[in-house]
Amino acid sequence: MLFGGPRYEDDYPRYEPRRRYRPEDDGAIMEPAPRAPRNRGAVRAATPRPALPAVPPKPEPVAKLENARKVLVVGDFLAGNVGSGLETTFEGSPGVAVVDRSDGSSGLVRDDHLDWQAALPGLIDEVKPAIVVVMLGANDRQMMSMGGTKEKFRTEAWLKEYTARIDKLAGTVTSRKLPLLWVGLPAFQSPSLMADAVTLNALYRSEMEKLGGEFVDVWDGFVDEEGKFIVTGSDINGQQVRLRGSDGITFTKAGKQKLAFYVERFVRRHMGDIASPDMVNLDAGSLPALSMTPSPADTLQTQPISLIDPNLDGGKDLLGAAPAPATLTETPRDKLVRRGELPDAPAGRIDDYRRGATR
Image (cartoon, rainbow, N blue to C red; front, side, top):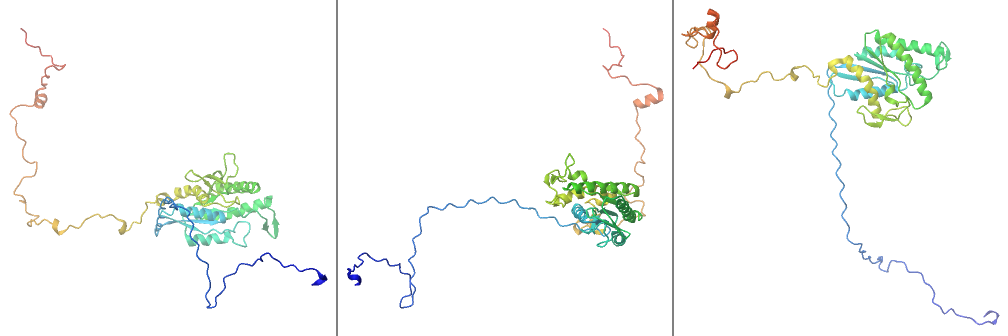
């Protein structure tokens, strides 16, 4: 005992931690007893969801005729949208085949990626189209290399050279006596893009009028009544849908279809009846059954008849050769023709002038 003080013992119970389950001597592991399940009441049956309407299967694509007339689509990424829409439009027309040869990064300003002036003649010889559709300009808002110098966009020299390139490309088509459809640029969300599109569309329109091509104006389909850019508008069926992408440049599926709708009218006018879905291949497999082979049960057995025998049925006179039967009394016609006598009017008629008997 230190310092001589008394020693006190703790008389309160000590805390002992709960014993954990440990292996017993025989190696078994003690597991806690399972708890009784709580009574949560009757579980309500889940309400079945209404069945979704069955989606009709997409019809099989119509096989194109061997002599189907082809529509060649060339240009940049906007031309690719036109080609996609035209393929959907004419997928049920066996007489029209759409050939999309557009290149998304191409244009008329730069020819290092793709030179349309050099590539288009070969494409026409390869595809042998009936109509050529061109849509360019979305990638042409940039400097142009001209004779070792570079001209800024929309300068007088730039516009002059760009017009010459339009004429050269269009002349490649018109010189072959092929219909040319040059599709104008649509409206864009950016005000500067819209202003540049208006300038380029004016060039396309004026040059097509000079060269004999046709300018397809799609501007009104993607602006409102005030001429402002719209993202949502009427589709080809008049329903309000989203037409443009979030960037204000690209098109949705409905927008592509509307873009192609403006071109479709010109294509159908040039194609005529061959663009109809009812056009079929005029081979032996498409002809209706013009004759039916008789079955043995329908065959009627007859005696052989000679075609040179005059008494086929026992008669010698032609039909109608018998004289008309003679009449003993004159008919009203005979009286009128022979003596000019008219028959008496029926009694009571207005021209009956006979006097009745007097008393």
